[in-house]
Length: 456
Image (cartoon, rainbow, N blue to C red; front, side):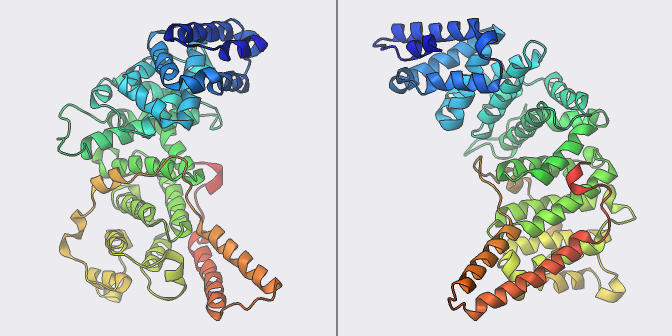
């Protein structure tokens, strides 16, 4: 595509010449889209020709602004596809692009284009979903933009997922689910963390929760998929998005029983495994898991017999508050927040040990935590703490199992090189091996209603 190289390498000294070059770029790529841009890879190559050009490097602020304005004004699907791709690829490298889009009021335009449907251009529609997600996850959206979202738009997104329920690998599943998750977080942030000296907006309703409250029975596939996604996802920020939605669903009476019971059991398996596998440094993420675990056990169908994995849950909670030995090595030092959150979980009625054997509720708490439980513990769970827990996009959650494998590899290397290994390191490894057996006892006792890795 020599012609395209000539266009993006043009020497432009004025805004008028830059505009002419951009028009030529969009005109050329649109006219030959069917011939040269046959897939996502071709479109990406075409975009990076501009983003890597002298034209862009010398005038990037002006070019970005002109591309953003083009998104507001352009209607041709072929041209829109290139504009959206340019903003998506540039924004992933430079968040200033997404911030400019937000400042210029692009969010309502994206909602409008997505709502027009995927029939015109499926590739464009998927990329619009990705652009809305990426733009929304790095910053707080304007309340005036969130207010404009209609119930019909949220139902439309849920309907896309439901329509694709037979194929969890469909490329629309993941982008659409992520958009719903990020919109839920934006509603939560605007309501519960509006910013310094800002009162919560009086006219803002969480349309995601509202839709599941009214029409949840028609959109069960979404629930199945977010559990499957939590099981697979290693990116911390996306895990948090899922946990925030689960927290609201399990603390809103009208959505206590949104999930099928079998799906809830799979979720218990996932949460047990993830809590065991989180590295000791992931304290904040562990707290969020515990904040979700309590209403999951206390409010949903799981409170009804037969009680799923009661013994495994109690053993996990005991391990999380143990001091000394392999358990403390695994989970790290027990902080007061962990004690408090574990205390809430062990107070779930169906988890309590037999009072005649354990001496009643306070004895159970004291036995597990080593502290007396204050009477007001039940009111300490805060939606604000869940809402404000954030992580930068792209950060992956560590794995305790991988950490132990790396420690073992280091020990093996030390032995091979005949270096002297401190006795404490050997003891630590033996403790970890003993802990692995405890982990296996918890995760493998009893059968999950479905294979954990195979979906709900």
